[in-house]
Length: 352
Ligand code: CP3
Image (cartoon, rainbow, N blue to C red):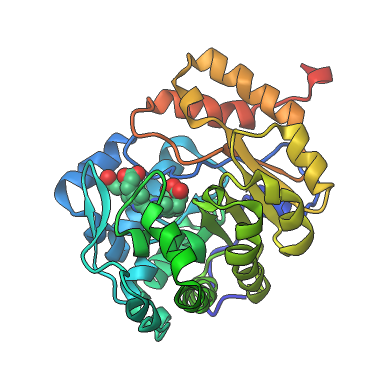
């Protein structure tokens, strides 16, 4: 367990669902639940730059707690970003409002890739661990705290592309042109992620999620070669807390992830049905998802109905209600609340 003592956990619904233990109702949280749809987040966003918010433990803690105070979901996720790891590996990352992340020195050549080495990641990212420890204390046991990291393939995408993209064409071209240099980079990113997650757990993270946001860009064979081995290695390295793997768009890999990854839960996006996900994973893992984030624009009564229907289809056990990707910036807070409350008030169809 972690190196410190923290207040006793009062709501363990999320951890029970991850361990596949019986629950009265599914736990609920939302990816990107600390974000631009919250007026209190926008207030801090006007005062501090993105990485000031990420790198100042008091600010990261305050932002992590905002959705907990506002919506009372069953888990908190530390406010940070997956791009802290590329930064620790020497990539200059700017977050440009309206444009997203931009790297000043992207990986362009084979030599650039071969010169990346994962060293002292936990020391370089100590502010994330400080934020986790502080947030565990401030949460006072209300709900568990989730740590996270980007998967090596997704980090590779940003480091080689140098910015966000729909296709990550430069990253994919690099992969096929320079397989040895790509393998080196993926290996170092895997090492960095293992060290980073171990440090997060030691600092107090009670579960970790690995975001492979761009897994869906790969063919099944390429996923097996370039993404799956590092996901397996990372998951196996996390000994003390459950791991959630979210390989967005990789519906074709669900079965392999369920049987081979060792994850406690798999995140699923909204492009697949609950029945498909349950069939492919055959009770081997818990599932998390998969409400279409843009459905949160529907009227609250409809959100509630769609949420109940989603739970009916996934089933109550071994399930964590969540969105199928991050919440969008223009969602009214009351609509997010309708989603969270519909899960918390869920009754099985025969007792409704
Ligand atoms: O979920 C949470 O509340 C925790 C915080 C969190 C953030 N980023 C904060 C953030 C988490 C878990 C992430 C993960 C992340 N970051 C991913 C994987 C998840 C996913 O969405 O696929 C990725 C790909 C990134 C990289 C990233 N960070 C991009 C592409 C962007 C710009 C796009 C955008 O949404 O603005 C960010 C910025 C970012 N990270 C914001 C937040 C709240 C918005 C920054 C702002 O404008 O204030």
